Amino acid sequence: MSDAFESKLRSHPGRQDMSEDCRKALQFALADLDARQRAGMPVKVETYFANETVLRVNPEAALDLIYKEILARTAAGESPALAEYARRFPDLEKELRALFEVHHAMEGSASGNTAPGFPNDTTRLESAQDVAAAKPLVTGYEL
Image (cartoon, rainbow, N blue to C red):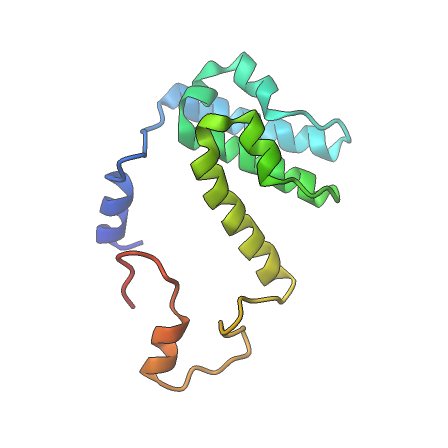
């Protein structure tokens, strides 16, 4: 990762540093959620938030755990929806919207579907114009 990118990421206005306690609680919660899902005993993330409030007050940790639940539910054949998560976590609706956009894009990519006009893995980029057209639309991103 470039130094400039890491610097921008660290200085993002909505980013909150994670304490060591939060990081440990998150590692445990992620592993536990995964183990319970594999054992057929799914649990909602609110259970972890109730037991470890540090996970809920840190938006980055909360979103990591929420996304793990979304992935687990998707793997189990469910179709988690933004509306459900926005109801459960109204203070994170904006972030959840972005998270679901990425989630759906990744699902489409995994199934071989790509956005209209976006080259797939077998497309050969012939020129700098092709590369420019294919790059992600991320503010500040340069090829």
